[in-house]
Length: 110
Image (tube, rainbow, N blue to C red; front, top):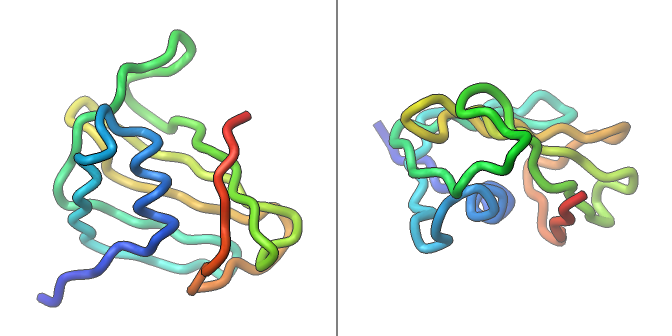
C-alpha cells in the first residue's frame, strides 16, 4: 500500500491539537473528499495536548476556523478522538466547495 502524504492543512490542524507540534508525524490510512470538505483517518495515533475544561476525552473536538481566498466563507474543523488519541480529522466548508488542493490558508481559534 502506498503511503498517503499529509496535506499542509491536515498537518497544521493536527499540530493545533497535539501536545507538541514536533509530534505531528501523521500516518494517514485514508482520505475522502466530499466536495464540501474531507475526512482523514489516521492509522497511528498521537498524544493530544492537555484538554480544556469543556473538552471530552472522546468524540469530536472543535478545531480552528480555516480562512482562505479559495473558500470565501471559510471552513471549520473537528478532530475525532478516543482514549488512545487522534483518529479522524473532519474539515467542512460553511457554504463553498472545498478544493482538493488548498494552497493559501490561515487558522483562527474562536
